[in-house]
Length: 423
Image (cartoon, rainbow, N blue to C red):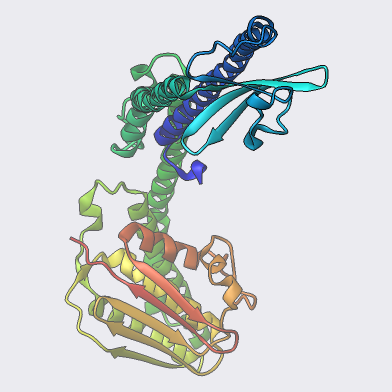
């Protein structure tokens, strides 16, 4: 339970507990020493007084000359008979309590006879209680002072850690112009932590920059050969070709269009979120869905599948056309590959869309893994590498969308994407 507390509170609790233990042991030591000294001094005093009484008074036949708080008893003298309450006490010092009264009883055995002095210790007990109250008050004040001092110390110790945490939390550390943190701290443990953070963050920045440049450069360089392929397909489509040859040309043209869309998607994914123009919403859900339904519906009908597009709710939001088309196309392609018979439905909702198929389904234990790169279902179809759903997840995360999956083996699959309209 203590490990779940904030670090500053743990320091305070440890400081106070240490003070309680040390101060408590010191207070108990004072009480023990007081009792020891009390027993030692009172024993000496009563032993001396009993010896003088026996030697100077009892042996001379005189009454004991004692003060009003001290009484003499003896088993050898009937007139000083020992009361029943004091019988059976051990030899030496004894301390008795009777209600609110307390007594010192000193017992001595001489020639088989018992002699004792009983002294009322009410006054000493009052002083002793006063001393114990002072010790208790000192203990409580020490604990209270330790709490205050520990609070100040904990805040002083945690101040640079809290400052470092706030600097890490409240600014964009991945920005290339963000200043390093280590120069703001001395060369101690906190400074070393800040330096380690700067070093790790620098490596992350370099890795992200390399990925961004690679994606941007590759996507940019692919545009030219894709334009050549697309224009060549257009020329071949107008030439007198056999039906099978025309089918192959159309297939190349579709693949070229898909690659062009992927290039555009990767270019936008490589851009920073601060570039708002790259993520502007310029298309409605219905228009993108109609375009994808026309494109994928024909392929599904060629496979013998029943494809339908339904509208269950009117959506007026505007979305990034590239991202929305890529997500929808990948999910439709996935349904096409994994559905051998039955139907595929594209259903539009208000602020969301669903793609349902009657295909092979996905085992429940693979629902989380299926969105990881290079992960394919147990009945992999097509020539993909398992990057389609990973790309869908990445785009949804970047856009603030939410993709969910419901599927069972043999029971079909339903993907649902909740959309957040772009500004």
